[in-house]
Image 1 (cartoon, one colour):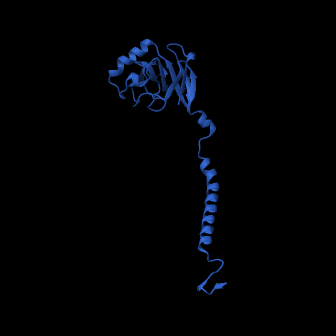
Image 2 (image 1 turned 180 degrees about the horizontal axis):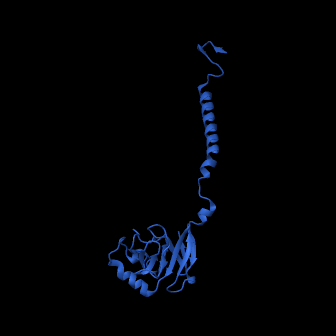
Image 3 (image 1 turned 45 degrees about the horizontal axis):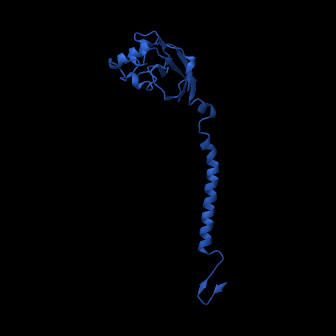
Length: 181
């Protein structure tokens, strides 16, 4: 119907506020549909439960006697947990100022007050071989594949390896339990 008194004609579909509402409702519905379609693709990129379970591990230190080492599997790599003797600690501290390829003090590689416990990723930094303890020239680890020698703090001393054995993130939960990762 036409409103002749004012001179303006009104049509049922010409209300601007109604048109804006329809546009906003359509855009909101489209965005919701796109999000519901995209979520499964985004969610599948999250790590699986077995991967998350490997992110950290707890270990009971009472299983390791003085001067012994335990090898664990963590994140698909070997992990050395070594209970160092006072002689090994003394030797490592004495070598703090030796000529090192990757300079690092023994205190930087252990937790304060827990120098007897050394936690290392057991992969040679040259090509990823697993070094053995006690075969090297410096009383520490020796990589038989290519001849890298590490000291009692896991620092590279001789051979082709460019870096020290890695120290993972770890914390002591108690005097007898450590959490790695």
